[in-house]
Structure formats: structure tokens, C-alpha cells
Length: 208
Image (tube, rainbow, N blue to C red; front, side):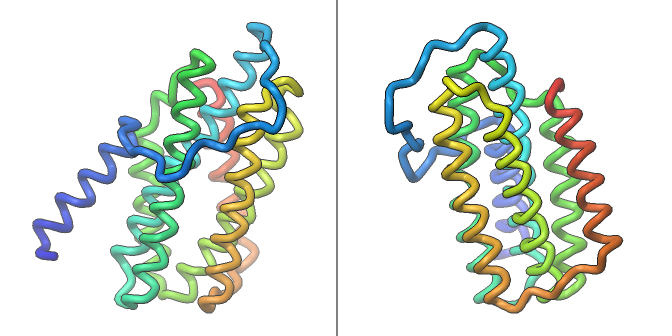
């Protein structure tokens, strides 16, 4: 692609991620049993948690897009692009679940996307091994975060639980793929900084 083409693709990806216009390639995970009716308080809690998860998927689009842009390794670029496509399912599923719960996405999605894109670009420019290590650490933290949501979601919200469980499995697969591709272990201070940034994002997105 020409430089102009790349800019247009990047702009299109950003707009679609923030406006929720991505369509899932897989059907949303469905619970094994019937879904229970939720109280207003339960809907509010589920909505807040799924808003945080939706923000995470907005950030995932930005991260993978930036890392694919930064690498000169064609094979690795295709791996990042494949992961981004899989994450669009998560983006669509969480957005649909927000609508079903009567909740809104984060008001700060443009800020989350821009910040994540910048971080992904820095990780990519640091070298492929570091970029892959960033994927591994990010996905491991996301797995822990999703497990905490499974612990907090209302017991009767089987629909949200099914989505989060499938997302958790997919994130583990992305981490494993990055490890197999030659990920480098990130220094402990970097991992701490990533956890702090994630904490700020999740706490803010829970309300905004």
C-alpha cells in the first residue's frame, strides 16, 4: 500500500473501533442454559464491567494495528493483523452486550485508542522480540482482568459470562502465539507500569 493508503486504513480502523461499526465474524457465545432476568442493580454492574471490557477491545485494536505498522517482518505483521481481526469479534460482542444491558460505551474511547496506539507503536519500534513480549504481558494481564470480572458478574448474567469466558480463551491463545514467535520477557518495572496504566484505565472506564 502507498503511504496515503496506510493512513486511510489506520483512520478507518480507528473510527470503526470507536463507533462500534465492526461486525463480528463469529456468532456471540451463548450460555448453555437460559438467561435469567436481571435486577436494575445487576444490569448496572454488568453494564459497567462490560464497558470496561469494551474499552479493552478498543485498546486492543489500537495496539495490534500500531504493532503491525511498526514491524518490518511480514510474517509478524500478518500475525498481528490476524490477532486484530479476532479482537474485532470481542469488540462487537461487548458493544452488543452493552446495548442489551442498556449501557453506553466509555465516553473516553478516543483517548483510550490514541494512548494505546502510541504505546503499541513504541513497543513495535523497540524491536520484534520486545513487541511480542508486550503482547504476552498484555494478554496475561487481560486474562487476569477477565477472570476478576467472571468473579464479579451477577450469577444470573449468563450472556455476559459466556462472552467473557470466550474472550479469556482467545486472549490466552494470542499470548501463546506471541511466545512461540519469540517474545522477550519484559523487565519487571515495565510490567509494573503496564499494570498501573491498566488500573487507571479500568477504574475510569467503569464510570466513564
